[in-house]
Amino acid sequence: MSIINSPLLEQLQTRHGLPLLDADNYDLFVYGNRNVLLFFCNDPSLFPESNDVAVILPELLKTFSGQLQAAVISKSIERELQARFRFTRWPSLVFLQNGDYLGVITGVHDWQDYRQETARLLATTPSQPPRFDLDKVCRT
Image 1 (cartoon, rainbow, N blue to C red):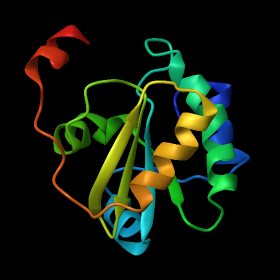
Image 2 (image 1 turned 180 degrees about the vertical axis):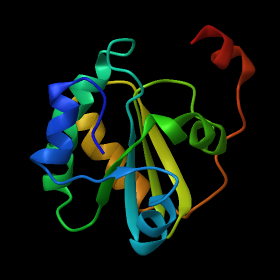
Image 3 (image 1 turned 180 degrees about the horizontal axis):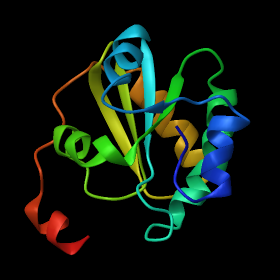
Image 4 (image 1 turned 135 degrees about the horizontal axis):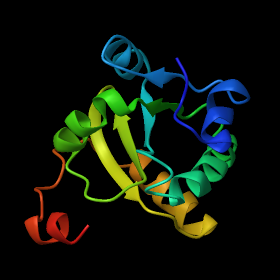
């Protein structure tokens, strides 16, 4: 199984060893690892920032070496999981602990922001995802 039409997204799987999660392997990965980072990239031709996050993600994993296990979410389950985690922008990085929601980083940010927000999320207690802000959903 491969990632959709982007060499940078493909490298996450082929060069960096990130699994592509679908309905068959999602639960095993999410509940089999303590801290999980899920990359929701959608279609990079529609959301070119996904390619930027594909470059940032391996560096983020190096920075938090051993603290996070990451995977790319297959387009086949993205919308279902988007509804579960209630984020409104692509690309998104969703953080889970033992399958429970910690938080999300959406869009592209400065490197320091990724580092600080990842550290903050890893130190938080799991909670319910925020409610959908319908105004934001309609604007994106």
